[in-house]
Image 1 (cartoon, rainbow, N blue to C red):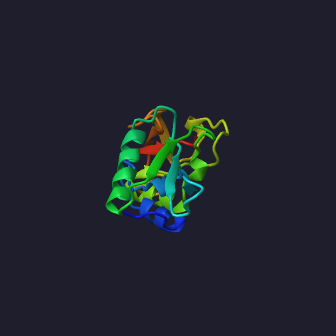
Image 2 (cartoon, one colour):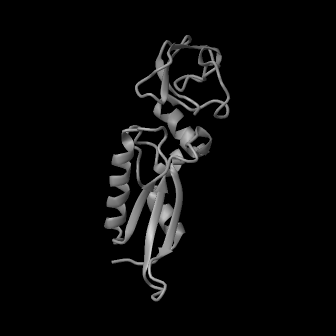
Image 3 (cartoon, helix red, strand yellow):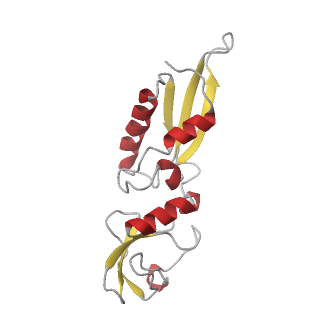
Length: 170
């Protein structure tokens, strides 16, 4: 059983936890890990610490969060951690601005257009120039404001004719 380790080691471990909806992205790539802390449970014993990991869903009611919590728990248990808690928080609300640049590149390589611009700017999706993840062309048009999941919109490249998901800014 592991007790106290470094926060850096936990962050490294979390890089191997994939998003169940987009498996090429880790929870680190998505930016949903808000904190990793070792909290002293008993003031008398300095070796008695609990690991607390706080996560934020990409949107309220995201069905993947339960699976993500289970995957994090499994990784921690496999690594020998027993005294941990995974908390979910809705504040501050998750934003695509928290995604890593590496994560955005993984999205493109996977065939999903990465978020364009910054979050909370009231973008009209139909007017955005979303580069096609297949051929790179910005000659694209929105087919539907909703794609394969509620955090994506469906676009079509007018050059290569391929449809693709666009991960919307939140």
